[in-house]
Length: 303
Image: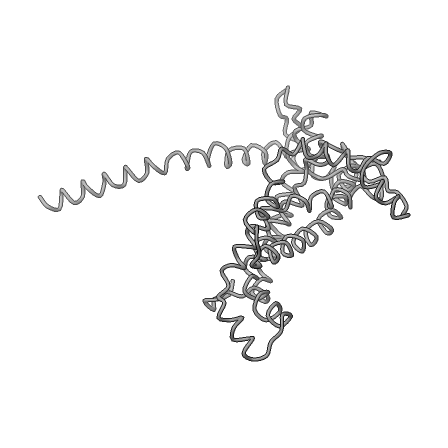
């Protein structure tokens, strides 16, 4: 009798547990796994959304890699160049701001909120502000350059300046990265700094031998997320440049969106999505594989 009661109680607990987990499981199946499976199928089809998909095998991949679709490699190049500039710039700037916010000073809570503010502002609104600031004719930035007797820039309207301008614009909204860095900095035990001071260490020794190793795990996380976000950049091209000038800011995801919803070529867009997925997966795996050489965990375990 007691065993039957225990079995019934265990069964009831399992039912309750699965009932709570069911929405998450269904959400994953319906909104993640099913769309991925469909996009994988569409990538092997000629599909224009309106009609029925027709099987073409790997034709879409051949068209992309062979250069028959010329914008594919142009968008890949623009995205890689952007990622090379944006990832280190965002990490360095966010880490420097986090170091400043970690110092004992008046109004620290106010400045933390101030630096995080751009993250909660609408992307469309902030984009129009940057358009005004970087306007080559009457923008504030060119006015300052003129006052300093420096040559003006075309910013978003120049082929050579559009990517640096978008990177500079992105640095402004690294508040979430700053918060994560700040959390890592505040988790460092002060006893390490005190021990280094006793041994005669200066500020540089503290930074190089204590701060940097202790936040390496936080840096690792921000690096992975930074790479993923940089390879998926979309809003700036969609709102500001529309891929111009002369395809200089034709980012990969913007080109993917254009193939799918402007040219109605869902098959080719799905193939591009899967190529991006594989590239992100490989780069993430490389970062994880090399992390045991530079990421330090206080417990002594390596990643």
